[in-house]
Amino acid sequence: MLEIKNINLDLKSTITCGQIFRYEEVEDSYIVVLSDRIVKLKMEDNNLIVTSNNYNNLEKIIRSYLDLDRDYNKINKELLLSDNSLKEIIKASKGFKIMHTPKLETCISYILSQNNGVPQIRNSLNLISKKIGTKTSFEGKEYFLFPSFNELKKLSVEDFHECKAGFRDKYLYKFINSDININKINNMETNDALEYLMSFKGIGLKVASCILLFAYQRFDVFPIDTWVKKYFNENYGISDIKSIKKIANDKFGKYSGLVIQYIFNYSRNR
Image (cartoon, rainbow, N blue to C red; front, side, top):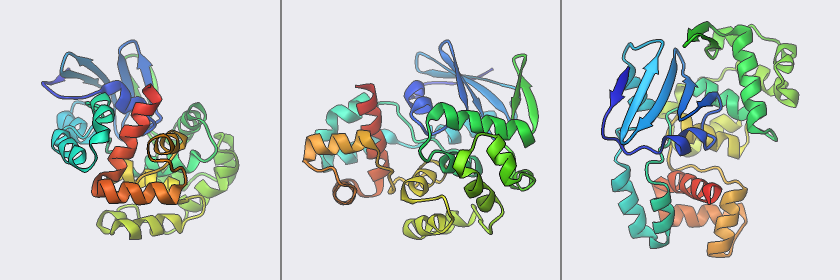
């Protein structure tokens, strides 16, 4: 067992807000499939309790995955100086983190997300993993790690369709068999990275924004959903995406993506 002490983490909101899809809620814990292991996460007071089937370098991996070493208090103070009306939202999102999710799985997850619900996305990801991923076990239960690029290249359009990808089966197949280089994005400017991702069929602005925000932690991009539109309509009198983006960029700049996630979390829980 690993214990990470004295951390400010809203585990439930962070895990369940749509950043990842392959997790299970078990009583007051969350079992999550990482790239190379299974972890069980639980908060006890201000301490994070982690159990796993692989303890190698575990604390470093968890700290990165849950973004535990970023100073969110400092960021929140900056945001309140920009717009004090965020006070209630930031207070309600205390401990919320932007996760550092695995790049490939995040790309596939959000390609699958188009016109799709969370249970369906989770099911499709699990089926893909079961079909071609590495089998592992944790607490007497069988799990499958998400496949690598080379493993995914073994799948046909029909295979993706059998994994309940629906009309997205062709998008997944073409993406995996394209010249995509997901590590190349690390060194790109944000706008260039958005354009690069959107050059692949099946990836529009919202999907590309989700990928950059969660897998690459680009806090200056933000997906806009119905919760966010509703908030901006109620508080700023606007609901079109172009105007929302302008206000977010003008007010929140490099932390726009974080603010949008705060708003989503606040609106969803309210």
